[in-house]
Picture 1 (cartoon, rainbow, N blue to C red):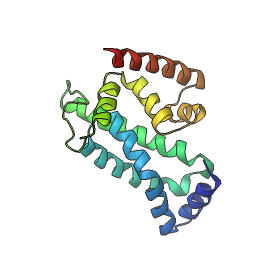
Picture 2: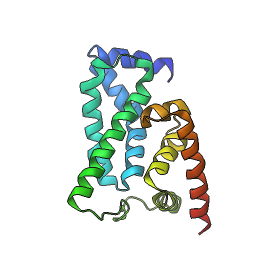
Picture 3: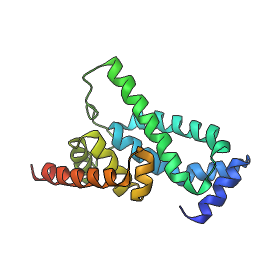
Picture 4: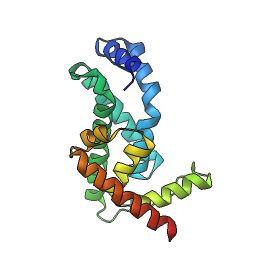
Length: 169
């Protein structure tokens, strides 16, 4: 994470509201995109992203290593996604994450990417989104996912293979 962000995180930790707003402005799109790719629906991404930011604001004072903010943020986002998926599966056991098309997705490339990602299993989709779309390092992905770096590499390899197969079909 860039040192400029570390300073913003530290300011936010001591209660600087403008710093918190700056964090939200700077990171919201990445969080929303991750959540959107994992849940497959923009309306859910809006709600879950809001939950993520509430958890971030509450947890910022306890963040011990501000330079690890990105990994910490995506760990919170991942927990929120998992909670949402659990809730959805408990309510309707056979819900497909891409069941409802998003009317905001009118660009063919976005639909294609969404369709392709939807065909990749959740664990592999998650590592693709974190690594390629959110530009987290292998180490940061490992931290977010709670697995060794080698597992991240294996999942990436498998995910890329599955994505190629999906694109070819």
